[in-house]
Structure formats: C-alpha cells, structure tokens
Image (tube, rainbow over the protein chains, first blue to last red):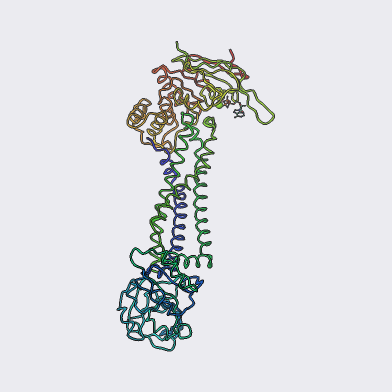
Length: 375
Length: 224
Ligand SMILES: Nc1ncnc2c1ncn2[C@@H]1O[C@H](COP(=O)(O)OP(=O)(O)OP(=O)(O)O)[C@@H](O)[C@H]1O
Ligand SMILES: [Mg+2]
C-alpha cells in the first residue's frame, strides 16, 4: 500500500513538527501536573503508609497526620488488652523550633515513639541505629532537611527548645506535605520537650493486628472502647490526610484545571493543524474521490495522520516528562508517574487526536469531487 | 460494436439562490469501444459539466446514463464511487497528481484505491510508467517533473484500473503545442491499444486530429 497519509505528513515537515509538538506539549503538561499532584499527595501520607500498622487511633476529628490534638497515653492499655492486637504503641507527632548554626529558627515536625524498630519506621535509614535514640538527647533527621536547614552530619548538635540535641542518624524519603523537615526522637524526650501538650499524653496510637485478623471487626471494637477517639484503617487514614490537602489548598482544582488546559491546548493544536492540512489538500482528497475512493478511504488517511501525530506526540511528550522528572528530582521535587497513568494518558492522547480529526472528517465527507476540474 | 457510454437527454440546471441556469438542455451522446470523441465548445458552454456527469461525479437534473450496459442510478450518489472505481479513468487539465507521492507511487496509489494491492500493484505501476516512457523518472516527485511528464503520469494513472471509459478535460491546455501533440498521440495509442472509449472535452481545435468523431456543444445542446 502506498501510504498517502504518512507521505503527505512528511511532505510538510514544519506543519508535522508543529502538530507533534502540540501533542507532546499537552502530554508533558499532563504528566508533569499529574505527577506533581500525586507526588505532593504522596508526601501527605507517606509516613502513614510506611509505618507497619493496621489501625490508627487519632484524637476525635483530626483532619490529617500533621495536625493532631492529644489524648491520655494510658488509653493504649485498653487497646493492648484486645485479643487480636499483637502490638499497640503511642506515637507523638508535633512541631518544634530548631535553631540552626546560622542562628535562624526553623520548624521541624517530630515523630516520637518508644520502639521505632517494632514498626519498621522510619523505613529508610542511611546512617545510625534507631535503638540509640533511647539513650539520650538524640535525634534522627531526614536527608530532605538539608534544603531548609542546610547540610548536616551525624554527630552535629542542634538547639531545640533550649536544649542541645545530637544528630545520631539520617533517614531518607520521610517527607511531609508542608515540606517541613521530619525528625525522629524518643517518646519520652518529646514529652519532656513539650510538657504542656504531652505530659502523660500522646497524639496517636498505632495498632498491629494478628495475621489474618478481621480488621474491620477490630476497628469497631476499639472504637467502642475509645468513644472519644477515631479509629481508622491505614488506607482510610491515608486518604483522609490526602483529601484534607486536596480540598483545603485548591491543589485538586489546580490540577484539574491544568490538566484540562493541557488537553485543550493539545486538542486545539491538533484540530487546527489537521484541519488546515485537510483544507490545503482538499483537491487531493477530491482526486482520491474522483479515482473511486470512498469517504472511508479519506477517513482512513486523515485518521491515520491523527494517529501518527498522537503516537509520536505521546512518545516525545512522555520522554520529556521523564527527563523533567529526573531533573526536578535533583531539586527535591517528586513526580510520581505510575504505569497506569502512562497507559491512561496514552489512550487519552489517541482518543483526543482522533476526535480532533472529526472536524476534518466532516469537511472531507463534504468534498465535492467536481473540485478536481476547477483550477 | 459494444456501447461503453450512453448518455440520453441529459440536462443540468444549476440553482443559485432564486436564479437557475440551465447549462445542459438535453444532450445525448454515445461512445462505443475503441472510439475517440472530441467535444468542443466555447468557454462556459458546459463541457466540464457534461464530462462530470458522464464520469459519475456530478448528477444530472434529468436524463439517463448507461455505462457498460449498466444503468446508473444517479439518484443514489452513494453508489457512484464504485462506478468511478471500476469503469472510469480521468485526466485533468491541472494533472492533479499527489505532490507528496513519486511518479510511481501516484500510479500505485490509484491501483490501491481500485483494490489492487501489494506487489501486483507495484509491478503494474512500473509497467504503466514504462508505457508512458517515464520508467527512469519513477522516483521523481511531481514538482521535479515537467508539465508534459506530469500529464503522462496522469494518463498512466487514469488507465491504471483498466477502465473501459477514459474522460479527459482539456488535457493539453496547460502544455506547449508540441508537447500537447505528443501527449495526444500517446493518449490515442493507449486508448486504441486496449479498445477503450475516450471522450476529450476541449476548446482547443488541434485536439480534433486524434478524433474519430467531433461534436460541439452550443447553448446546452449538441450542434449537428
Ligand atoms: N457548481 C456550479 N454552480 C453553479 N454554476 C455552475 C457550477 N458549475 C458550473 N457552473 C456554470 O455552468 C456553466 C458551464 O460551466 P462548465 O465548467 O461546464 O463550462 P466549460 O465549457 O467547461 O468551460 P471552460 O471551457 O471555461 O472550462 C458556466 O456558466 C458555469 O458558471
Ligand atoms: Mg471546463
């Protein structure tokens, strides 16, 4: 088969480039925007998803992991006495001022537990031993803190609430939605540093159930025993934390809007270039009809052109998005582009390009083959 | 002799708003196999209009059209592409080659449209190009060919599907006299070789040279 569609596309290389760039631009925009969205959203729940618990007990109406009230720490006993519960521990999450070597005062978000290792939390440790936290005024700091707090080394001291704490370890990937750097310390040290809020009190109780236990039944039972708290499964608690940021910051709206704009730009560019191209080749399509081609032959030609633009545009756009992902990673920004997203954007590009061709289809269907006799 | 084209009492009236112009007022014309008919007439006399109707591109206002013993139902335009594909080859004043396709591909594409594909189409396109004397130009794009060469390729493309009826609208109008004569010569030879019926409409009197019969269109009717 002589490929009139492709040859005609390649015959006008500049227009072809514009079409493909239009699709690529839209694809990149959608990937980057969705990737940023999921990346940021992932930060809002990354600690919840990585702590090895089945249930989270929170103060009533806590909107997300970062903004918790406190409740009596002895509640944990009521949970531990449950038969399906393998382990239940208190977890304090709170904010502290930290004075940097430069003299600047910054905020850090502290996670404090008695036994971190039992919860495989934090989950990526590049330096230090978590067991040492118990032994004194120590803390672990996440690598991402270097962006705000400057470089640090294990062995450095930092002043926190008028107390000198020694950094004895370094974690990776422990982020917060607010980008406040995370630190980790012993539970009792946290209570000493913030006695007003945490003297005899905790922010959360995390619960590990027996293997194969009925999670929902256990959740209900705990909720019955602690009527002034909320009890969530990991998935629900993570969703709640994420949803808070989506709804309160307009992040969701912003994402939808940019994705919509990206799609719009892509569709408009493809529609426009395909349509001008169809108009410019109208006499050729008339000739195709004159030599016996049907509308279907012409749809196939235009459809194929749209498809080629979609495929190449998608490939270029996806490639660019992955390059950008690599570049912004170095800047501390995370683009999350899961395979499902790639698949959806791929199918979306093809469908949108074909629908962009619809305008040209209509034009082509209306071509009067008598046009071939006109000059 | 077998009749290839029989047009009977063809009329065509164009309507533009409230005005209507009767361009063809009852034209009857038949072509038998192997016959070359030249239709002359002044500019605007309706030559192209008649050719379009005979080529199943335009539908007449009234009249009957029979091609290869088959009555064309002109009230059913959806069937016309099939008639064009199977029975008719066109040659145009403007050549109308596909600018993105090479000489060879232009012919091969026409064969593809007519349902002949793959190696068969390729081989046949090469033979046709050879028949019009342009074998060594097969990879040239139309923009790199002269007018005469383009029209030869167009002729090769027109006979590509082996149509029994060839229709040409002013095939020499964009060519020098000498080149025009060569083209007509080639056209005549190829039409006669395969016993095709050929209708050429033109206002160029020199085309008469290749005609078996000349008719003239005047005031929407064929003059005697
Ligand atoms: N689609 C149309 N709508 C309205 N009028 C038309 C249409 N096509 C042709 N006509 C009119 O019909 C008349 C005959 O046109 P046609 O093109 O058949 O003439 P022609 O003999 O081929 O002329 P020429 O030698 O200049 O090519 C002209 O007056 C033209 O304006
Ligand atoms: Mg004309």
